[in-house]
Length: 115
Image 1 (cartoon, rainbow, N blue to C red):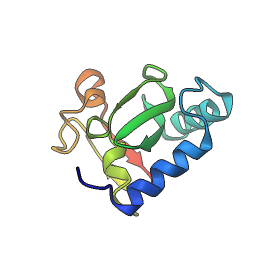
Image 2 (image 1 turned 60 degrees about the horizontal axis):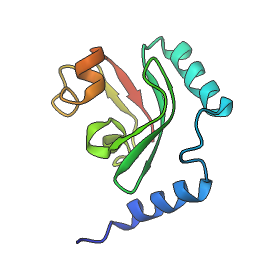
Image 3 (image 1 turned 90 degrees about the horizontal axis):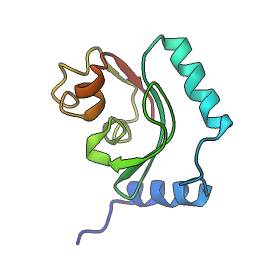
Image 4 (image 1 turned 135 degrees about the vertical axis):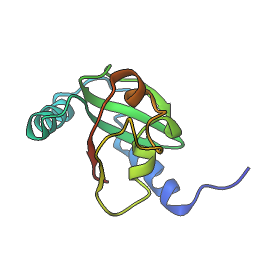
């Protein structure tokens, strides 16, 4: 088995040190996703924690609350790999994202993600 790159190992350690994984809904996180949804006028917003090859939905608006998924199934796996903002005009047409569950089931179009 290959050791994770240093950035991945560091990110996982930081997320685990927060002590919030599996804590359920928290108003402090829900407030952020509500404000983001209102500010950008988008149907879906997520506050996800990427750790150890898994993404945990700490807060969502317009999508099921909680749960985890393999990082290759969610947008976050792409956003954590860049230091630049990522703008996806239509996720249903973008080959990086069109196969992922939010794009397929909700037809989510645009996204702006920041690391």
